[in-house]
Image (cartoon, rainbow, N blue to C red; front, side):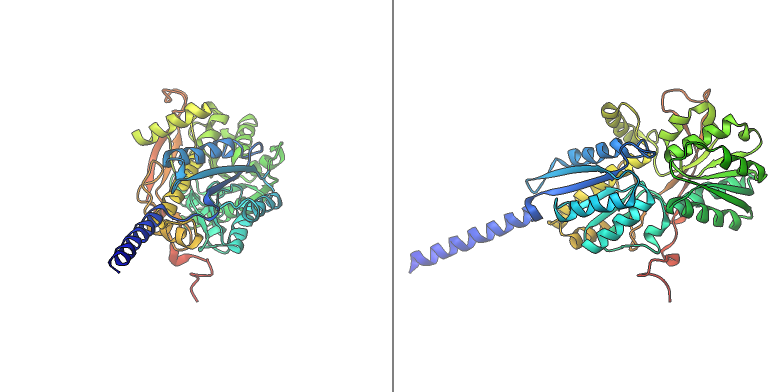
Length: 407
């Protein structure tokens, strides 16, 4: 009897020790954490996201240690070609067949809206970085599964739109990419301009990845507006700025690059881009921490990262930390931790994911340096102002997300 009691006690201790070890180790579906980076690998937004976004996600996995509870962390990637139907099919395959736990990047607002809706349907986490439509946390929100991480059209308008009107640019005409993102950016910036005392004289819309901007710029020129607001991004912004300079439009009217990243400035060149005001969520030369990360990225990619690349790194790392804290890759448990945990890394300080899925962080107003002011490669920005996240982004009280919409 005594031997049986001792054996039972030992078995109980062993079982307790095993359960503690299992709890510490955590539990993963399919014994792997699998992250999908959905981006534009070769089109108009390839420099904006593309291979650089994939590299940023891989760097986050590397910095996390490469494993979760002793199991492998995998990064897969795909080119959505800026087509929502392709994006949806790829993501459906990832979720159903390849057991991808989370998708990140998802640039292009049409793509982001499709993927976010699918994540909601499939109960999978979707983090949007490159896309900017404010619909993602308003009418088309998915707060239980979706996160909007880098910027949105409301924050972009709030920062650069207000600054330009205050500086005398009180009449606007928009050159707008003809899809969800461009429409949102035109609308949200126009509202900021009018609220600040300016006026909107009109707009013209161009197809995504336009080769010839001459007819669109002619309409903007004949409007007589002081400011031509570029409600586009990536290669379209680069090409419209270059065309405006070639046609001599910038000698009489000023351009407002409403969404322009440092990779776009590099493509345009300082001679043409100098003096432009723009809004960014991050800049590689802000402090020692940003410079150190940018150096590591540049060693791999042979160029500096933009704010979108930095946000993909941050979002991926935050997700992995949340899985670790939750002890599981279960969607609800991980989302709970992502909302609870502040974001403090080289991308953001005291960032927070709000109930509507909006990641709130500081935004910055920059002006592009002149060639004479730039002292080194990629030394492109002068910081003109910092806007606190709660002031830059739409307040939760004004959210049009059905879960939070006021009756």
